[in-house]
Length: 181
Image 1: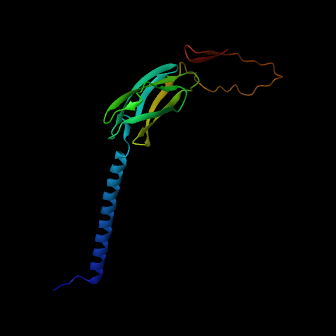
Image 2: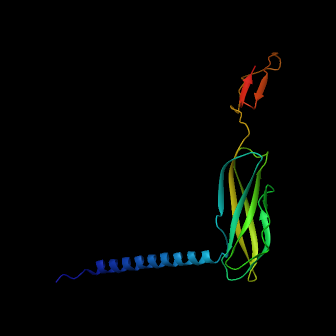
Image 3: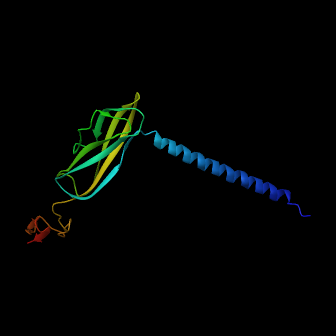
């Protein structure tokens, strides 16, 4: 009869142990991640809202839905925003067990922002069963300027103060063009 060589058997056992350990680690990791998700009793339905293109000076209101998934009432301690352009108010002081509440969030894309992506975050802190828990909500918008000037840079070449040369530059924001005269 042909018996397996000891080296092949040892290699097979080591492979089996390594694969078994990897599977055990993967199952343990998945179990710990699912338990971490259950440790957050305050959860917004959507944690990030992408508004897309918004105009400068445009005010937007988003109703964020906050869920209390715990077995205890939540007492709101504070609501903080990441900038003065964001407002969050009118949330009840108590969020009942297994219920949801609506948090109206306002954002004003005021002049002063350059064009491009802008984001703001709302952080809510609440006491549940003598522990403070947090929930975050983020609003992201792409601010579109009222007008755009192209090109953004004009090279007039070399000019000398003594040459008496002059160039008049006018900007027409309605059309978004530069006229050089």
